[in-house]
Length: 80
Image (cartoon, rainbow, N blue to C red; front, side, top):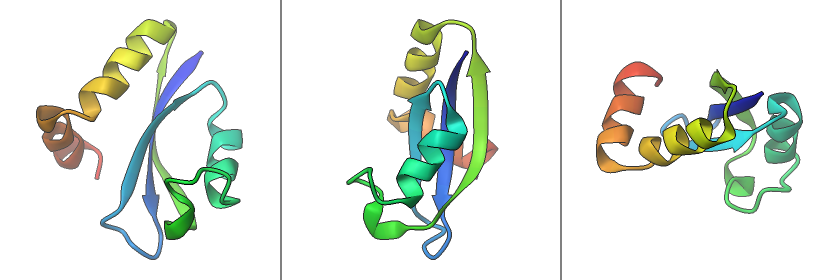
């Protein structure tokens, strides 16, 4: 299974990150351990949403959409 996940910074709740993974728990640990450079400065992170897809292609398409202008608006209305 493939997951599109949204995490939110605990000390900076206006900061969020959208990603794609096969193991949400391990990936969240990577973010909180500072392994991911783009999220290291805003640790710790909390999982807000994880959406499961059977197809990696569909998951990647949804992740890409959430990073577009209309996708960001959708994300803020529905998930944050």
